[in-house]
Image 1 (tube, rainbow, N blue to C red):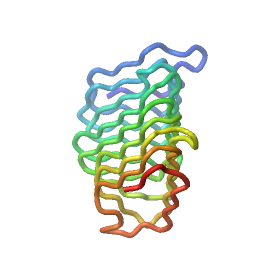
Image 2: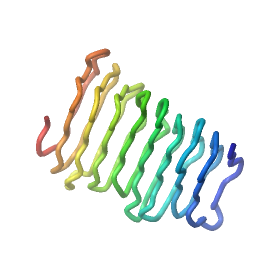
Image 3: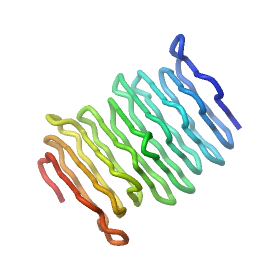
Image 4: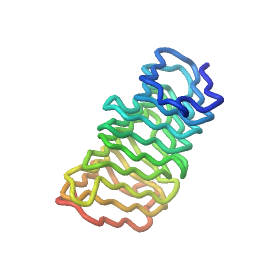
Amino acid sequence: AVIFGGDVGSGTRLGALSIVSADDVTANANITAASFNQTDGTGTTDLNGAVDTDTAAGVTITNETITVDNTITTTGTGVVTLNADTMTLTFTAPGDIISDGAVSLTAAGGITTAGDVTTTDDDVTYVSATTLSGPVSISTGAGGAGNINFSSTLNGTQNLTLLAGTGNITFTGVVGGTTPLDDVTITSAANVT
């Protein structure tokens, strides 16, 4: 297991932080680095502290289960790619993503989210079945062309607010088929399908 008990890079930003192999990864404090990459895992990655990166490599995590309990912020065109390749990907209400690059979220056992997502004209894609556990706002920027994609089903008795600027919003799977959503507000988009 890898456990970060104190702040990482708080005085001076770390370079690339890479975890090549680990069962569980727990960040109980803030991580400030050029990038944060976990290439594989056989347990749970739990981000209790805020993660902040400033290069294009951004934040890329693969593990069986991923839980985000604090903000993920990327600058420098940094992407956010999270892949729970066996179980679930969960965002609690503090688990917001503020990304300067594309956001891609995948979970074999489904995504549960109460976290907002904001990008700077970059695509946001929920690859797997998604359930809202709290009100969620997703924005790719008022004037930009970032798309918002739900590539599977979408459920949860919560409000959903979407702003895609001149980008498109696409719902590929059934929306509200298991549990109907509350209010769905689309502030802006070129096309909604």
